[in-house]
Image 1 (cartoon, rainbow, N blue to C red):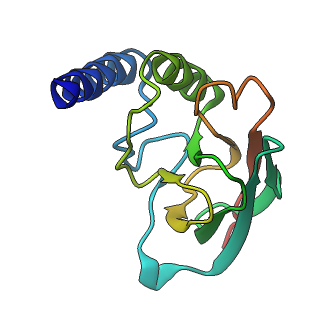
Image 2 (tube, rainbow, N blue to C red):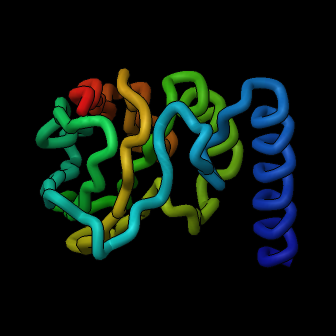
Length: 162
């Protein structure tokens, strides 16, 4: 029964996300090249690795990251806390919408290139290419964590013209 409920929650999340993607042109999962936040990167094209620590103080370190447009970054994400945390890349709007779904379905698991969910003491990674200049937000969407301030931003500098 628990698996049926979990599957229903996941199906509902993706259905809602698809509706949001149709309306806004963006979505926290299934990123493509037209997305404001970028796209899944190719590991062989990584130009830099950034270590991000997540703690039970509901903070990311660093919370402010600077990259260049076109850059592919490997984020090595560590959960130094004693409870589950995650790092999810997206627009502020996407993150807030996804957070509302997470509050209703706290056991939801993710398998998207723009996010990593980690148990206490675990390390994971996201390889991401930042295709557009501007700001990309990130947050922990575990219930209560976003409200407690567990968020940050990546500033993507416009690529120099050749």
